[in-house]
Image 1 (cartoon, helix red, strand yellow):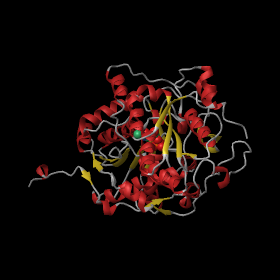
Image 2 (cartoon, rainbow, N blue to C red):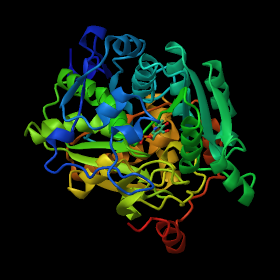
Image 3 (cartoon, protein in one colour):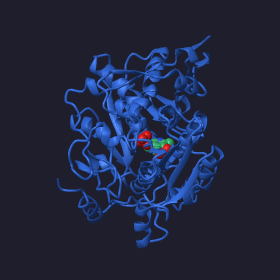
Length: 458
Ligand SMILES: Cc1ncc(COP(=O)(O)O)c(C=O)c1O
């Protein structure tokens, strides 16, 4: 058969029996260990006992683990197999539309029950909490993806879930709250009148659009006041990034199936950094071992540019200052990002582990305005047939910039991106874009300075 008529492979699949059974912890492979978290009141390094009111011991142990690999419990593997291994696609139609000689791959996490990568960590977090006798988990949600994932995971392990959804997202996406409720969760619009942190913000403005920082304060406060409850975070922390590494472990096996021996660019969107780290960390391990040498690039919204315009400093992970202080790239814990449609990327800080690696020069970062992201999302939908969530359109926009550059230079770069969720609940955002109502907000130097001024002096 002539080459042009050969059937082309679109997706690279793994059998359930090939699903990795260990998570990869990058910390022991770093040339310099990351700085420790500090107690929000004493500013001293925190120990396991300080975290115990919020997290079960198994997760605290993972947070500070010196082990390179951690076994995935069989109960968690069993749930993962409902949707894992997830597919790796070669974006052949998109490549054609871009006229690029680059080879573009995307690892698709939208096949999960919640529609994103978030169940990869929600399931083990619910499992460990249930095993330690916890009855309820509280959390925040920005895009609604994490809250859905946690409600789903809690139901499977017999736990209650109580979720504070960022106001802007609650208003834009009513069906997300309904889905969380369908899975058995209880959902509140944040800032809510139920917590001290929420009431303080509502006193300034009752219809406040909220932020992830505020919603985290509410969920932490609720867990701290209930001995039967613990708190769960859907991003940022080491154990969350650890659980997401199953994405990159699978992707490595799938790229081998695709016959790829080189890799030039790994690109992912970053809110708190978990989907990006999940794809990138196992690849960085191979890079450190000299197997290939890709650039590792994080992409954030121009409206919430923590890596590209933030300061690397100790700051609170939440607005009210209840959560531990971590050293990270931050816009200041009082910075309230514009209500852009990528709700999952509206976080003032960045994962401390990724921030540390950024300082070590192990990754690069770009900020992209939201209309360019939706341009990319629509082209992707019209070529590959998947409507992406607004968050991964940031990664797609950057991948497309690179693929277009390759069209100019003729380079056959191999680009891998994390398509971390679908956008089926984000149609109001697509409507805003398609009807020409979407705007790109500029973060002025003045607003930036105001946010940065809230970083505490130690
Ligand atoms: C689909 C999707 N992508 C990305 C993110 C950002 O989180 P992270 O940077 O931890 O992957 C979120 C967070 O809610 C999300 O729902």
